Image 1 (cartoon, rainbow, N blue to C red):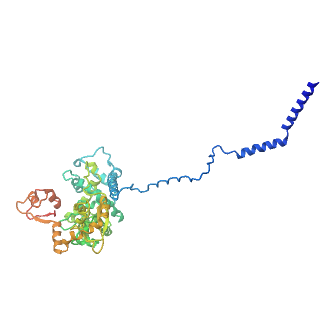
Image 2 (image 1 turned 90 degrees about the horizontal axis):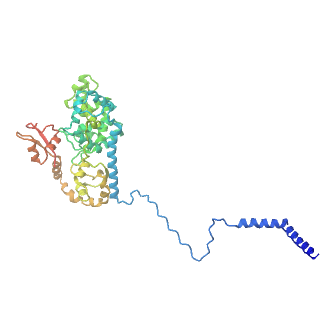
Image 3 (image 1 turned 30 degrees about the horizontal axis):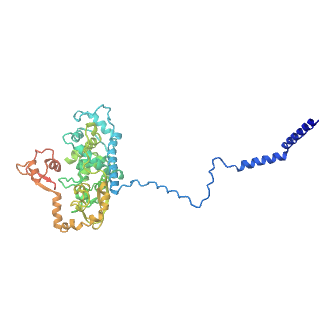
Length: 461
C-alpha cells in the first residue's frame, strides 16, 4: 500500500511540471525575452568599443599634393630644351609625313623610280596632273629642261632647298593659307632666291621673294641703313601674298600673275597687246627673255620638290635651327650684347634675323622682333637686364654716322670687275673666300667662263 501511495505522488508532480510548461503567459514571456536578446545583439563585424582614455588620437598625415606641373621640376632652360626637341621632331616628322601620305610613292603604277634622262614624257605629264593645282602645271620640252636642271645630281640644288624648306615652308604656307592663295606658290621663293633670305640679284632685288626697293616699300616693308625687311622671311612673305593677290585680281589667271611677279604687269600687258594672247603660253614669245623661263622654272621646282624621292634625291640637313621663338625688343640693341652674355653665336642670330643689316636692332621709337632658338629663350629672359646693360659697350661705335656707313659697306660686300687673266681661283684667294661661294653669290654655272669687265659680287665676311 505504501508503494502505491509513493507512485501516485510521483505521477502528480510530473503532471504539475507538464502543466507549467504549457502555460501561455510563460511562453509569451519567453518569446519576448528572445526578441529582446536578438535586438540588442551587436553585429558580428562591428568594431569593439574602445575604452575612453585621457590622450587624444594622433592626427593622420596629410596626403601629398598631386603633381600637376608638366615641367616635372625642370628649370626654364631645361624646359626650353625639351620643347625644342619636341618642335624639331614635329617639324621633321611633318615634313616626312607630307610625302608619305599625300604624294603617291608611284603615281604612274611604275615599280621603281626611273632615271631622269629615261623618264617618259607621259610620266612627267601624269605626275604634274596628279598635283591637282589651281595653277595650271603644263608639261612641254621647256618645262622638261627645268625639271632636269632641278633634279640633276650635278648641282644638288633641290637637296639643299629641301633642307631649307623645313624651316621656311611652314611660315610661307601659313601666310599663303591666311591670304587664301594656292599653297603651290611656295615654290616661287625657290626660283627667286633658292630659299636664301639674303640673296641679292644684279638688279638689286633682295630676299626670299626678291623685292625691288620701290615694290617692297609700297607693300609696307621697312628699308633703311639698319633694317631691310625684304630679308625678313615673315614680313616679306606677308608683302608677297598681298602683291600676288593684287596681280591675280588684275589677270584672273595664275600663269599671268606669276609672270607679272617676275617682270611687272606693264611688260605682261605689252606682251598681251602685241600677241593678242590671254595666257602665258600664248604670249610666251613676246615676254622678256628671263620671264619666258619663269613659269617653266616654277613648274620644274614644284615637280622636283614633290617628287624628289622618285629621283633618289635626299634632303640635306637643315642649316638653320628648326625650333625657334620670338621676343619683343624695346631698346636699341646690338647682337654682340646677346652673344657675349649667353651661349648664342652672332652667326646664329644673323641667320635667324637677316633683316638687321648691321647686327643692330634699332628699337628706339618702336619695338622690333628678335627670333631666337627655342633652347635659348629662357636663358635670354633670365639675362635680359645684363644684356641691356652692355649697350654703351657695343653701340658707341655706331653713334657716328660715318661708322654706320663703314659697317654697312663691310657687311654688304664688294663688287669685283674681272680683268684680263683673272680666274675664279685667283679672285677667291684674293678675298679669302671659296670658288663655290663666288659661283653661288653670282649664280654662275661654270667656273671657267669669265669675261673681261664682268662684275662679280663678293659678299662681306
